[in-house]
Amino acid sequence: MPVHKSAKKRVRSNERNSVINGNRRSRIRTFIKKVLLAVKAGNYEEARAAFLAAEPEIQRGVNKDIFHKKTASRLVSRLSARVKKVKAA
Image 1 (cartoon, rainbow, N blue to C red):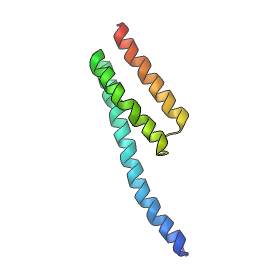
Image 2 (image 1 turned 135 degrees about the vertical axis):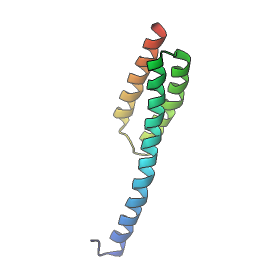
Image 3 (image 1 turned 180 degrees about the vertical axis):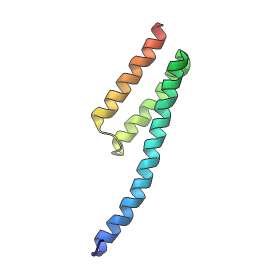
Image 4 (image 1 turned 180 degrees about the horizontal axis):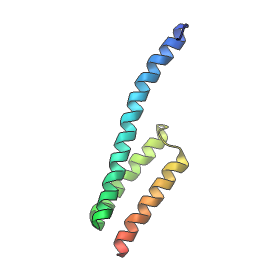
């Protein structure tokens, strides 16, 4: 258990940030899921629109320290490849 005043404050702020970060992570996953569902349906226009909405959300996750920069880059790259594959098909 924290003893110092600053340690008690850190526990409170960690709890708040944990909730906020969880919400952000969930939002990003929802955007990714929309892209994947559109790809699975084979709808290129919908997949492209969902991808264009998801990419800035993923990058925002990097700025907010939800994801590492390279993790986000890998996610965007793989989503982009899937969307392009739908267009080719």
